[in-house]
Length: 321
Image (cartoon, rainbow, N blue to C red; front, side):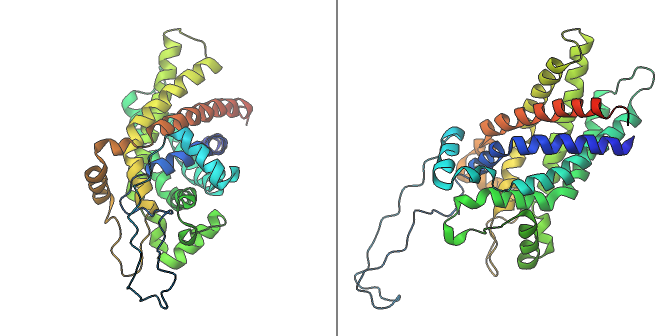
C-alpha cells in the first residue's frame, strides 16, 4: 500500500510539473530581476578603432552606463522570452523538472501518504490538522534533500537564457548539468541552497497537502459539493494559494543562491541564505521577497489543481491494485 502512494504521487507530480513548466520558468526569471551583480547583456566594452593594443588608454571612448533594465510583468516577460529565445526557451530545463518531480515530489507525496495512513484516526477516518502539518513538514524535508541536485540544475537551466551568450552554461540536459557541476564546482555544489530547498519544501508540502485535505474535508462535511471534480478543483486551488503565500520569500532566496556564479578565488555574491536575504531586502526593499508572486500563484494554482485532480484520477485507476 505504501509503494502505491509513491507511484500515484509521482505520476501526478510529473504531469503537473511538465504542464506548468513555462510558468515556473517565468517565475524564476522574475525572481532574478534586480540583482545587483546580475550581468547586463546590453553592456559591451568599447575601445577606439585606432587603439593598437588592449592596454591603450589614450583617446578611449567613455560610454555612460545604460539605465538598469526595466522590470517587466509575467506576460511581457513571457512574450520577450518567446521573441528573443524562441518557443523552446519556455521549456528550458524541462528534463530537470521531470527528474526533480521524480525524486522530490514522489518522495514527499509518498511519505505523506504513509504518514496519513498511520496517523488517521481509525474511528472517525479523519486526521487532525496539526498531524497533517507535521506529516507535511517531515515529508517535504526528506523529499527536498533527495531532489536538491535536480532543483539546482532546473534553476540554472531556466535562468541561462537571461545571461549574455559568452556567460551561458549551455547545459544540454539535466544529466549534463549535474555532471558538469560535480566536476567543475565539486559534488557539494549539487546541494547548494539545500537548507533553503528543505525549508521551502517543508512550507509547501505542509501548506499544500495539509490544506488540500483540510479544504476537501470541510467542503464535504458542510455539504457544499459532493466528492468529485468540482470539490477537487476548489480545494486544490485554495491549497495552491496558501502554498504560494507561505513559500514565495524562501523561493526567491533559493533561486538566487542556486543561480549564483562562484568563480575560483573570488568572493561569492552571497555567503549564504541569510546574507542573500539581507542583501536583497537592502538593495530592493522587503517586497523583493515577493518578487515573482504573480507567476508563482499563476503557476502554483494550476500546478496544485493539475496535481490533485490527476492524483484523484490515478487513485481511481489504481484502486484495485
